Amino acid sequence: MWIDTHVHLDAREYGGDGAGVARRAEAAGVSMIVIMAVEPGNFDTVAALAAGSPNACYALGIHPMCVPQAHDDDLAYLRTRVEAAMGDPRFVGIGEIGLDFFIPELTTPEMREKQARFFREQLRIARDFGLPVMTHVRRSQDQVLKHLRQIRPPSGIAHAFNGSLQQAQNFIDLGLHLGFGGNLTFTRALQIRRLATELPLDWIVLETDSPDIAPSWIHPGSNSPENLPGIGAALAELRGVDTDVVRVAAHRASLAAIPRLAGLCAAV
Image (tube, rainbow, N blue to C red):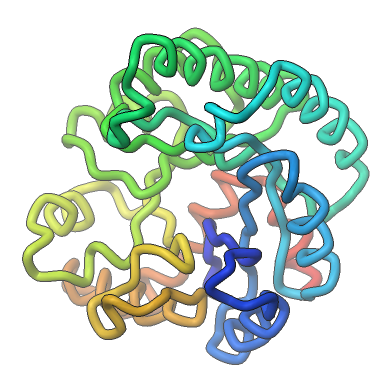
């Protein structure tokens, strides 16, 4: 089965039809999708979407792009929600969290410090509850690695990875898998395609980041988790292996990165 480890099913691009998107993904062979939260205001929405879709589960977290509007009380609220969600089999981890040093307004000294503080506290929550983290690492790989070394969650994913081979190995050494998606379908994405072929297949998970990072065949349109099998086929072609080899390896890697998926996938 295909697993999409990173989607935003409540995005406005779907016009409130996230459940329909999940159904179409299931029809396309995507047996599980992991819905990311980005701030406390969408915690209930992602949980409800997962509850209403047999092939969906969810993570809770505060995205670095939402940190400027966030308050310390939001971190306390996240901890409370995580504790309450531990009994929900469709709750699988902490995400999307991390650091973003691409957007100019997030790169001021004040915002860098606030991002780091929110990231570290969310890493503590993950560590305290034994949960994986789904990390945002845009232009921040080394800084994310620094905090992960100091506050180590049990597992997780470096989402939309686009660093160096050395950085990739550093994430692997910390027990984090590497997320690849639609970017690898573009012939001009030389660095990403090189990484996707040279990294150990057992440490690669597949994701769409829907509705973002659309693959080449629909760019610049909105992405959807139903495109994941095509992304997997593109990775197989790059590596010169059968698509089933990638599907099986990505499934195994997804369960290693997000262990609570195992029970859900067994029930599908």
